[in-house]
Image 1 (cartoon, rainbow, N blue to C red):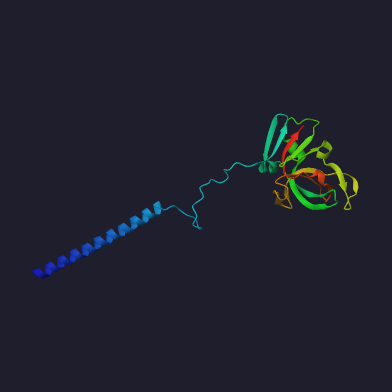
Image 2 (cartoon, one colour):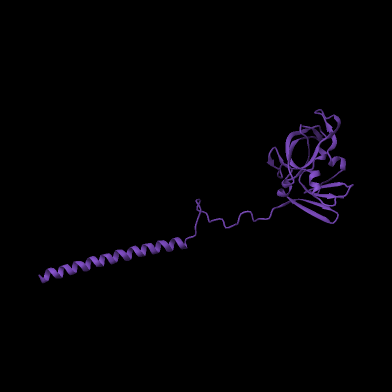
Length: 210
């Protein structure tokens, strides 16, 4: 009888010991799993470190500077698009008779752009400068779109009533260095109209009102 009682006590000790071992093992596994999750940096689906750069915090690039006397005004693409957009057709012919276009150009009209400048002189010359230093002067008539137009054989057909714009898109695509952008001067109309290529200035970066 005493031996049976001793065996029962021993069995209880074994059961208790196994239970303790199981509890400790579970606790260790849960703890190490938690620590691993806490200390391992999170990664995205492509196993790349998370992007720590806040969105939309980079300064916008100035594409165009306008000077009037001692005053200077800088415009980003967002500034230009906020002034309103126009999308019309433009073509130009060079000295060899080669016609480019018609293409659809999107931009802001020069008159609208200039209206955003305070204290604009009544009479002025519109001096446009490209990134390579090439420059053109435009009269007020030309700024207002009153320029010579041509037929498809290169003959002059009179003075048109076009719209001079600062274009930033060609056929719906943003202009770049290859397409004489990101900004260029263009002359557009509701229907394809051919103008002198010498009036179209690519890679526009600065306008001086003098």
